[in-house]
Image (cartoon, rainbow, N blue to C red):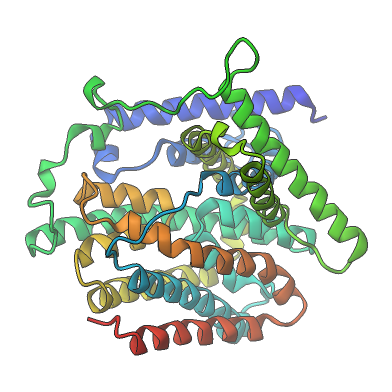
Length: 437
């Protein structure tokens, strides 16, 4: 029977595998060349050796439930890391249009391909098609959110399929991204990197030399009363708990409408951040510390998410899933490098590579690929995206929150068409604003 010690064992095993994955990244050259994250390696090892694989390690059968809790904590921490940025001559408008339209087109493709093609050929769940964008755009976090929302509505296989899509997307983002970097340096498209082989050693191994190490944050509390890490973690947990309570409250009064915990946590986080600002307490919350806590939770989320994949489910849907994922990959590939040239006035290759990592993997993968071609961040890609994301985030939260309900209740086609029209509308705005190069 699962209990506190079962949770303890699961965390201990995944922690050990994360350390093994880190050791592999430091020591094995081909893993370094592919920039494979240790969390991905840990997840693959847990999948191969756990109950869904060889059964050699005693992971509990509750591994799949951790993702829902972790993503609530991660989304709850997002408002605490936001800061007001200033637009100092950056291409914020084009970056917003380029990023927002690509995001919407990916959701439209997944929904339409699933409903109008794949669901006509195979007996699939109504939300099968959106496992691709949920896994690609948001990585394992969004995949967990979408999967657990569908689980509550009676479609258990969606979690495994979305996690598989997220894993496939991360691997593809790294491998294809590195191929493009080598190609870009030969074609002289890169503005700051002349030769791929000139990459510093710390980018390959992931270990920083002493002179390049930075502080993880600042102490805002005296340790004689409460450690600063405890203070920041307590706020994140309180927000996530509030999101869980909010979700239960909505379900109580609207039994037919399941509001995901992660989206509730995000809303509670926004309200809590405003409360901290009003009471002048927010300057005691360290954005760096919260960011590192969120990063830690994300590493465990990726590892647990991959470990929870049910190989039998993947094999059952292998043909339609392969068609869906390869179609999504092709669409993103064409969109990213065609539209980046058309909409980015400066450093189009760097910005294209960053969004490629985000569209197919995670924000972290986008940043990792960007650091390869722009180690000193001179392209200001992240600055432009940070401002643009202020307008993208609400759309993303709404889509992820409403998608499971829409597809289960027969509004999937309408949902997909709205996404398509929304993407075209954004492109129309870009055209009339003369953001095209």
